[in-house]
Length: 255
Image (cartoon, rainbow, N blue to C red; front, top):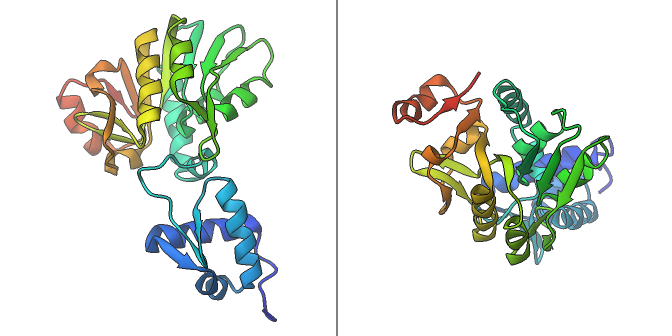
């Protein structure tokens, strides 16, 4: 393409491609090349890179938006609603109990909190590859990664082995995100994610759920636990949104 837009950064193209796929569910190489003012070869390269990161699924001649039933890349989740996730992390830090050991799941909101917490001389157990790598850079933090099958899409260990490993721990706090929240409970996109969170739930004395406001509008089928089973739910959702939950006796805080 003679007039290809060479000023657009790769991250900008990724963002625009994701937004287009989210709205239209699928796209051809040609239509995105026209929309982004780049060559079809550039779009194909972007598709290849984005598929490796678990951001989309390539098809013959194009790409499709990842199904809501699939786990989404942690890189995509960290980008989406990033300001909200940081706000939730701030709320959680204001209500964090004393602890010496914790389980931190692979959620992007838990990642935002973990990177800001002082975890010196504490033990962190996690199934999140990115969280384990990031926390291992901190001094005096014992990081235990739960081994298992690593899924390229979400950079987390899944399957029976991390669940079995959790049986050998007795932890103070569980810091966990969720794909969706309703009055009936916290829900996940996949059965495997639900299973590992349920295993951690049994092995922790206190359970804290971290959910940004977008999760109250989602709907998935795999329930981790009823909300009443959590000791605390931290969110940035409005007081109007959380009012029915508070009225139901669920401990939700948004400030």
